[in-house]
Length: 53
Image 1 (spheres, rainbow, N blue to C red):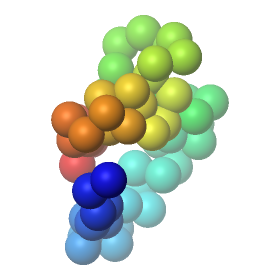
Image 2 (image 1 turned 90 degrees about the horizontal axis):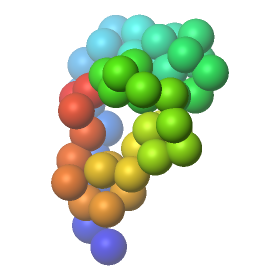
Image 3 (image 1 turned 90 degrees about the vertical axis):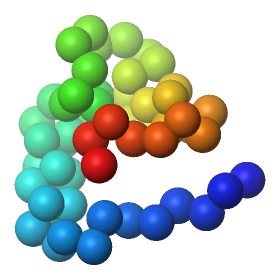
Image 4 (image 1 turned 30 degrees about the vertical axis):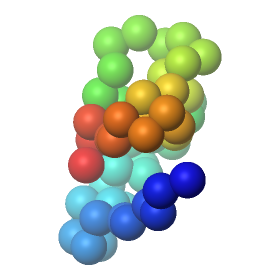
């Protein structure tokens, strides 16, 4: 399993967390609210990275 490194921009991370919370836990970068898009999304869990940054 690879190591996760959080974005060093604390303001960005704080705002992203708010967006996720306001989106009921779904990735704010994905268009559809489906189980694969619950944060952390399927792409991230499978090692393809995070679209949100």
